[in-house]
Amino acid sequence: MSSAYPTPLILDGNATAEQIREELRQLTVARVAAGRRPPHLTAVLVGNDGGSETYVAHKIKACAAVGFGSELIRLEATTTQVELMAVVESLNQNPMVDGYIVQLPLPDHLDAVAVNLAIAPEKDVDGFHPVNLGRMALGLPCYQPATPSGILELIRRNGIDLTGMHAVVLGRSAIVGSPMAQMLSRNAKPGNCTVTLCHSKTKDIQKHCLQADLLVAALGKPGFVTADMVRPGAVVIDVGTTRVADPSKRSGYALRGDVCYEEVAPRCRAITPVPGGVGPMTIASLLQNTWLAANRS
Amino acid sequence: MSSAYPTPLILDGNATAEQIREELRQLTVARVAAGRRPPHLTAVLVGNDGGSETYVAHKIKACAAVGFGSELIRLEATTTQVELMAVVESLNQNPMVDGYIVQLPLPDHLDAVAVNLAIAPEKDVDGFHPVNLGRMALGLPCYQPATPSGILELIRRNGIDLTGMHAVVLGRSAIVGSPMAQMLSRNAKPGNCTVTLCHSKTKDIQKHCLQADLLVAALGKPGFVTADMVRPGAVVIDVGTTRVADPSKRSGYALRGDVCYEEVAPRCRAITPVPGGVGPMTIASLLQNTWLAANRS
Image 1 (spheres, rainbow over the protein chains, first blue to last red):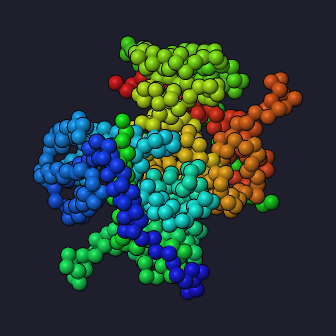
Image 2: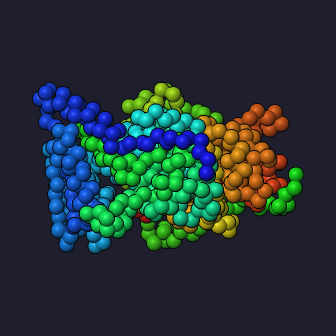
Image 3: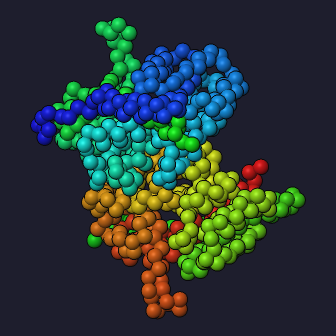
């Protein structure tokens, strides 16, 4: 297959996240030098889901890397709703906690929606609370959902101008696909894309994908996007991080994206790898939101 | 030009709104028979904008038609922000007011965003407050923005199943185009459309329009959508209501939609007229939200 861009730009999330961490490190040093305490992020982890353990560990490590304070609150998988809500309430009240997250997914017996609604919007650094989503919809200052925010930052810092592009977003989740579509379409920079949002009920998804100048895959279906779905010269963002068995790895699994990287990359103007693309940017956005939270008053 | 649907279905907003009013009338009669007061809507009108006068008058009249209580609070065009905020606060506190609206646009010296944020979300029957927009994004119970909600109701009550359709929305306003795109894409009935949101920065808007099974025009540009932009068999919804000078009318003006109705209608499976399409449905949705507000506790 011919390619308009024989050497695609690899959108290196690790490198761009490190830029952001360096900026936050300097800001934190200046803040502390001015006699204020460093920003503080708390993470709540219920149970022992393997993926969640990894994500939370990365978040705590990222805090340390920029000089933020952090704390991991571990709760048993058998924690009741009442117990979890009490933890949320204490975090809302605690003036030493600037922002906090309750790592998803929660065990099945817990009501994640009720937990989300109970988080104080001004400490909701994941940007999942309705007040933050609604403020985003109106273009008001808010904590933006970390993954779409990180994707826009990755695109912007790699010098790609989205204005006027046709963006096709695959997946309509409340925390990635839907806010991604909104953020891409707003009158802002980055933004101003014509946006098509596709999902499981979309007919002829290939037809839509082939029109995309920017394709964001957030389905959680490993290898869904193949070369024949990508227009030469497209920018491709892979949000998928599904664990698939891989005996060759020490952990026993590998992370697999929604995009068949090997066959798609040669067609692209730019593409994110998995891992090392969107994942680190999501954590960098969480740090940025925590910085905002620490400076909100 | 040939047409797949020689007799398009006219989506009669007046008739469908009257169905809804009849339902609300019966509910109100039953509510009052049970010893409760009727639902109550208050409208705040600042200044004397001609269009706003008309809209507010229609809303008050619609309340009367279903047996709701209503009140129009008229404020001078010179009202200050502090005075308007005091009115908002008193409406928030008044237990006799189930829901209220502050008619837009406000005079230039007033801050409409600050007013919107000050309205108690549980009385925000326009559905413009961030809490309601955010709850909608998460699929939680909320007051849905009246215009997109009315459009979905018009489509549903006319027996059109949207599932799997490609919807193209023209215009990204926070109160019509953007929430319309969200509501069409969600996993619900009506819903489950693949949605493309177009706006002033969209390139080749005709190409996008021609792919639409459902075309929603909400640009406020009279006559923007011409026959060569509409695919035969499409459902076309015209949200535009621009006043254009018309000496043949007693009022001196006519309402003109975003769609060239005469040339587009013969191509369509279904189409809304202007006036008498989306406008009456918007008011019917406002009544439905007021009913919900009266029954929220």
